[in-house]
Length: 196
Ligand SMILES: Cc1cn([C@H]2C[C@H](O)[C@@H](COP(=O)(O)OP(=O)(O)OP(=O)(O)O)O2)c(=O)[nH]c1=O
Image (cartoon, rainbow, N blue to C red; front, side):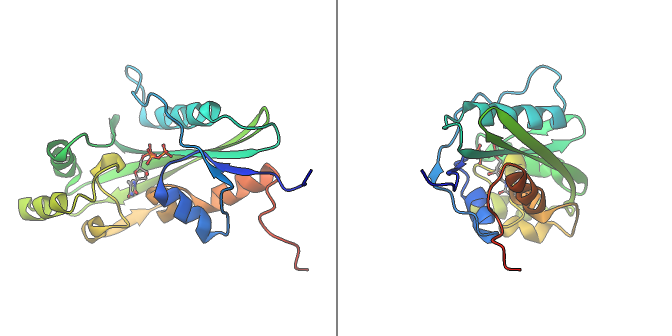
């Protein structure tokens, strides 16, 4: 038996796969969790995000020695959760809501190994400039909003709408790399080979 644990990415998000590759982590297997992401009645964004992440991690089947990573990115405007828009009309409505103000992006990460679970969540603030109807319509036409929480992606054309952030860029894209590295090491993932 090999000592190196198998690493399972419990996410279908190509962004998360690419962000992990940035720190040299390549999954042995990808198992996208299929869970109900409906918020509970009156559920606030941060508890929602951590609950969804834990639920994703619990839903991924793995062997006792495997290391599983799951995450969730939630966009919040005050107490309101802006999920993935169902269509172009909803994406347009989200962009109108976000225009000219600040909102929060929360990304929670969970790493599971056997019956142990390690978790972190990172909250960032994003300012969106005041958007004209022309800008919103042009962005919607790119289809880049599809599958993105809040209806935009900072790493795509919507980057032109974001003059300022506070927090973690990688967390806004989908996975806070510094916290993720810490969780993987806590779970015994051999992230850094000894070069001393
Ligand atoms: C705010 C924002 C979100 N997003 C994306 C990251 C996530 O993929 C997505 C939020 O949906 P999530 O439910 O977090 O993830 P997912 O459904 O894409 O993948 P899985 O549950 O299998 O892990 O929004 C960006 O890519 N850029 C951004 O700026």
